Image (cartoon, rainbow, N blue to C red):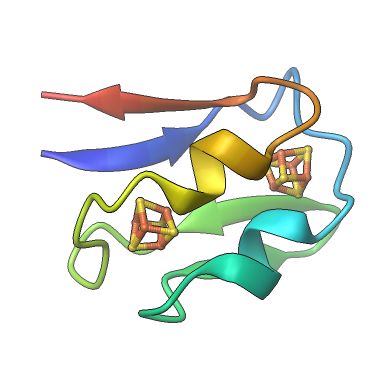
Length: 58
Ligand code: SF4
Ligand code: SF4
């Protein structure tokens, strides 16, 4: 289980990258991606995302 970013909604604002305590949210060219191995599912990125682009995937 990890948080994932929907690339069709992401505006590449970078807020998720700034709040992630595990540095799991990283830039991948224009959009952002979350490293599932690092994500500890704290939910901080999802609460910050202005585009509601981040969801939990089982
Ligand atoms: S849920 Fe927490 S650990 Fe996972 S990517 Fe978001 S901020 Fe980082
Ligand atoms: S906070 Fe949301 S819109 Fe901003 S870079 Fe992260 S996923 Fe994209």
